[in-house]
Image (tube, rainbow, N blue to C red):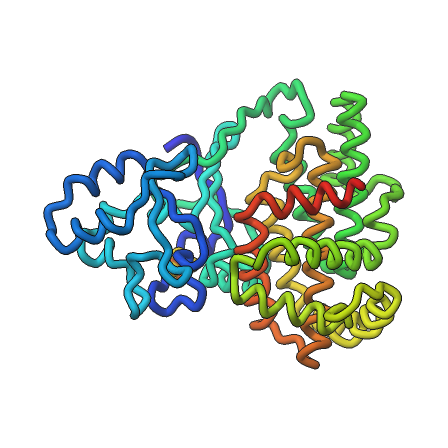
Length: 388
Ligand code: SF4
């Protein structure tokens, strides 16, 4: 293992809850099998399992990274038992699980001199552990992290002698998470601080001014000083932008069903709650949004604001913000799309059900993550529509 392992402390306690899981990772997804696992499957002696593997594995049309894929039955993995257990695990043992099944929902990234370990919120158990942690999202050095894993991303950093803005990744992320966790401000103001910081950083990165970037980070680290507010369309009029995004979602849904029945139900609540089920009347939707925001989202944030704080802290950590876009500006637009969509859904869901409970919010975020974090095409299309 390279260097120390850093991650939120909950990842060390994470355990798949198997049959108790309400939205198992085997539902609705492409289940890829790597070359090494396929070789093992070809040598299986257990006659019943051999017959099933021959029948349920498809080698044609598997993606570039995978040698085969598992067929889905009723939108679930063909090896998932009625009780919700994995038949490969039960009959052949853990060593026969593919890389994907062994790893999910864990991600390991090699960042400069250390490793980072995170868990995906599309897993219901991971979402509960990360989001419902009232003490807040905190990064620690992990002593009991697994020592065998597949690395998803490897980023070389020159932290001692920075040569490019990317070398400041760790410090930048710490500032962003610090801004989000400033309990003296409302969540909206904190998010706006994150936007200002990224906008300023983008300007300096384009000027290639490493000295000014260092000064920007230092000013925040030493005195909490922030750059002056900058104008940006998503920031100025986030509710209008959020409604535009909802219409974009309607266009995506018209092309194809959502790959999650759980998300489909929340999407329907969103449209109902904003009055966009039958029409695209943005004026009416805007009035509904204003009214319901105060009644549901603002009320919810007073008591349970830590849920969105944890969500976005985890987002910044696991996606290596702002390295998750082609530019810092694109990374900013992506996090704004997520923030605007999540807030619009919570307002719609609250209005539609006349209540917004923490369990509902966690369950919505899990279903939303399952659709939008694992299907890059949606973000690609939303970004494209935003640029029009
Ligand atoms: S989604 Fe998470 S808890 Fe559910 S089956 Fe998969 S790993 Fe286990």
